[in-house]
Amino acid sequence: MPTMRDKTRFSRVFKRAAKATLAASVLALTSLSAHAIRLDQLQKNLSSAPLVRGDFTQKREMAMFDQPLLSSGQFLLSAKNGLWWHQTQPMPVSLVLTQDKLSQQFDNQPAQVLSASDNPMVFYFSHVFLSLFKGDTSQLTEQFDLSLKEIKDSTTNNQWQLVLTPKVAPLDKVFSKIEIEGGKFINELELDEIRGDKTIITFSQQKTTPTTLTSEEQRVFQF
Image (cartoon, rainbow, N blue to C red):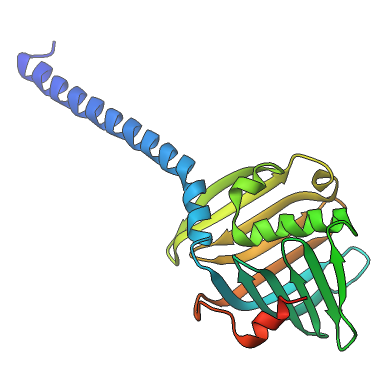
């Protein structure tokens, strides 16, 4: 039969357990709330810099080819002007996307310029990808279901993964999912297609300075 001392000890243990359970519940709710607002914080962090420059490598795996197609180059993302995608390997390709125009130049050939009215579908996909690069989650939620989680291990700090599942046509007819991983910047973008093809773009050497366009960069956006 338990003694009075046993009852007192049990009561203390029970109270500590109850407090621990309550603390765990509060922590869980806090974590959920932090996770819920983290999507907004992610967009704020990714869109805070007026200019981002860096390098990219791209690997495209296609069912019709035994080996992946590899390419690399530099990119410039300007909040005011748009995106300059400058591929240097295996051949020079310059793609410039603004709000209402798209310029594409292969090697030393004359650039081809399209407006939104020329090919609405091209601009639809182009601006979806521009939203991806900008981390514009407010635009992405119209086309995708978004799932955001933190990545924590011994070698990463403040890393995150955003999984986008298309919910509207024509995106849901092309992509099964899109995954974005990063920290301060986007580090990797993976595009998984319905038919089995996959594209992985890895970004490196990102920087936010200088904060203004060079004369050459200004000319790129003038077309």
